[in-house]
Length: 148
Image (cartoon, rainbow, N blue to C red):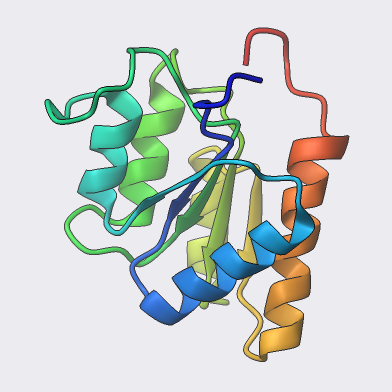
């Protein structure tokens, strides 16, 4: 892996959830580079390289995307739809992390191509353990298609 390769793109607008998620991922010691987007528009700019201030070479994509459902500017479902409808990003694993337990949100996430839907646990220890397990599975146990 190149030193500048982004392993996880975390798309989260809640500062508390963002801090907890980052802390839990760093604790696993599996993740060397995490990029953060605080709204859906920023995430799409990062992924598709439409941000002129971004020095990343085109085509440099994260290995995993952790995506909140309720985001400002562009919501998580629209971000998911854009990712899964583009051939360059279709195979990227996208994990929905949300406080919503609504069957409609879960069903729509899977219909749009989410690889997993996880309801954020309320307490700190459960949240930390959930994020740790997600990171460990998707970055060390899962085998993505070649070229992903």
